[in-house]
Structures are given as structure tokens and as C-alpha cells.
Amino acid sequence: MTTTDVPVAPAPEEAPPLGEPARMFGVIWSPRKAFTDIVRRPSFWAPFVLLVVFQTAVSLAIYKPVIIPSQLAKMAEQPNFTAEKQAMIEKGMESPVGWVIATATGLLGMPIALLLWAGMLYFVFSLLMSGRANFKSVFTVVCYASIVGMIAALVKLPLMIARQDLEVSIGPAALLERPDPPTFLYSFLQGMDVLGIWSWLVVAVGLSVLYRKPQGSTTLATMAIFLVFVLVSAGIRSMFHPGS
Image (cartoon, rainbow, N blue to C red; front, side, top):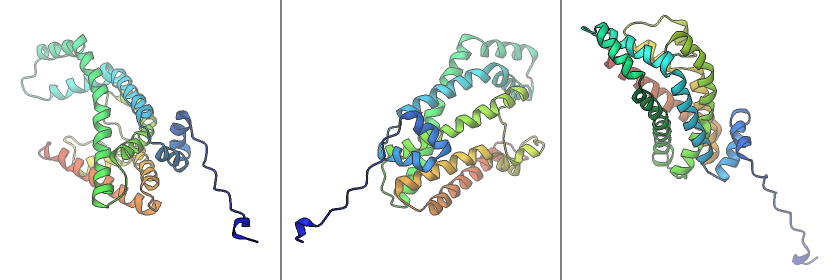
């Protein structure tokens, strides 16, 4: 048999591409399979638009029943905050200008949060750890992983409305009475939100696929970043509340 007669093994067939709904649901139910397709064809626009629209809708849904009462309650703690001032501020917040600000917060808040999260992960994995991935790919992974946050928002939304409280946490802080002012320990436990941790674990799967690193090491590095983020956030919050 000549060399030309040697049979050549067929190349493995590439999995058919997933549609956007399959990608988004796959991030929840089968993240590694979904991220394999996402990394192969990175495009962030579908989840990005969905997240911005969803966040804007949530912001508008909680604006009157949660945000306005919460802001007024904080202002009422200030000295010389009279009933007249409260009525004037409440009228302003319920005016069209107030609703425009609430809409702008939803439209701008989510893109800023996504960019900061992706930038932090890109800095650690691509720059500090010399990983081979561009910012667009990391941003795409972050956008798809943030779909988990939509589930978290839907779970917390009725609780926020019922309690008129923006700082609802599904985690160890929920078992404690909130101190006033909030202590460092309470703020730290509040940051250990179960649904928030889920988002970070999902993004760790995406980064593992993107950077072609073992799942264990990627998860360890990602959760270390998460822990530092929670500690810094709790420290900053304590700094702005003397006596906590």
C-alpha cells in the first residue's frame, strides 16, 4: 500500500451553531456548551440589548414604590429636613423629570456595570496572567453571564417592593437584623449574595473556555477577585458611615 492509499481519518465535525435563545438559556442550564459556541462566535449585542432593556424596566418598576420612599427615608434622617422640603422633593421625584432620570439610570447603569466588570476581568486574566483573549471576547462572556442576574432581579423584585428596600440580599445577611449604620461585617455578608455568586461562577466557566484554562484554576481566580471586590465594597461603605 502506497502512502497515497493510506486512509485519512475524517476531521471532527464542528457542532452546529446555536441560536441566540439557545445561547442565553444554555448559559443557565449548560454553561460550558453555551460558552463554547459563544467563544467561537463572539457577539455581545443580543445579551447587551436585552440586559439594558430589562434593567431599565426594573428601574422604572421600582422607582415609585421603592426608590422614592427609600430616598425620602434617608433624607428624613438629616437635621432640619422639614415636611415642606419632603413634599417638594417628593413632587420633583414624581415629576416627568424624575422619571426621565430613572430611565437614564437604567439605560446607563447596566452598560457601565458591564464595562467595569469586563475591564476588571480582562486586566487580571489578559494582562496580569498573560491570557490570550481580547476585550471584546471578555465583554461578550460577561454579557452572557449577566443573564443570570436577570433571574436574581426577578427573585428580588417582589421582596424589594414589599419591603420598600433596595438592598435585598439572598444570603447570610438576610438572617441578621440590619444595623444602623451598617457595619463592615454586615456589608460583607450582604455582598455574599447567593444569586450574585452564581453569576460569578457562570462567568468563571466562560473564562475557562475563553482562555483555555482548567475550570478549577479559573474558578479559584475568579472567586478570589469576587472576594476582594466584596471586601473593598464593604470597606468603602463603612468609611462613609462613621461609627460602623
